[in-house]
Image (cartoon, rainbow, N blue to C red; front, top):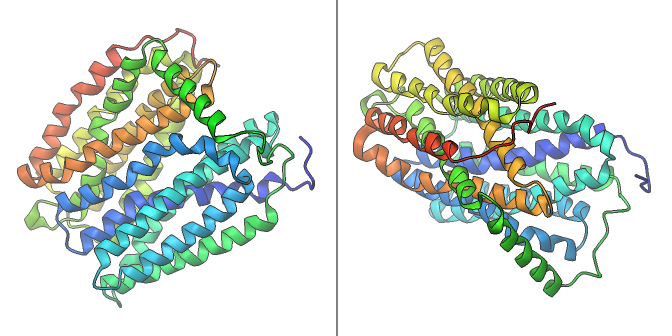
Length: 422
């Protein structure tokens, strides 16, 4: 594909996908951390933060209309600047008397900007690279997205722990988010000059709102008319139910005081355990899961991956009942749970690709990702209230009981024997 200037993909793909991952981690992980340290209850923390998934739920509804206004390149640069502004908004309001209302407002702006940036970045990736380059760099983009997870879940929380020794919680997070603001202003300026200008990335002036509405309506209807559509929606909503319950509560549990039934990890310890050990387990599980499906196909590994995404949750039952003080024992348990999730999640992602095959596959996959975000949002709305009502021990037992739903959802699926094989 010819462009006006030849720029190595190495110059922009790593930074682009690092910039795609970090705001998502800020919205889904750092917001929890802030509100927990500000003294909100588990029920309040999970309720407020779960609503922040909504932009990723409804992202497929507005993504087709981005082509009517400017280019994918323009959306990337502008959204990165808007992400920086949202970070600045969080940094300012977290240190005010209206910190809850203010930070929620700017986290919403951050979530919408990040979701829109995702659309622009993924579309630009397809336009800026030829087919061979797309295949070559798919692992690179994934790696730098995961690096942003380590930085966000591990590095930034550990940094906050270090700052917390000299500053109160308000100033600590204010400094962290001002730093993130500076980073994204810099990334936006960098991409303003370094991103190529693919010929395909042009404004679709010939399109109209009415045409896009009609096309989207037809795509939406065709999604629900596909074979197994209702079973697929149940699968997308239920397969990750146990994990959707655990993810917000585990962060609170690992840092809650012993008196409350938690493990009382410091911010630095939590950053190392969840942000480094946990992410390594997630990556290892995902890599091995992808290799297994590539060798034997999705159908062969559907049930083992259903077991993998459910049974390792027993690690949190163990942690809740034994409350170990040994950081190595805690790290091993967190690694096992994340490894199982990473391994099992491969089946979820591959099945979205499988269901999206055929005409309108890009739009159908986008709708699947909306249901995927919804599967995380809905359980989180009541996870904290449930944990408060029964305590951490019984909460994780209830999570294990909820593991029946992924098996019921997977049992309804029909998958081609050869799908996923190399």
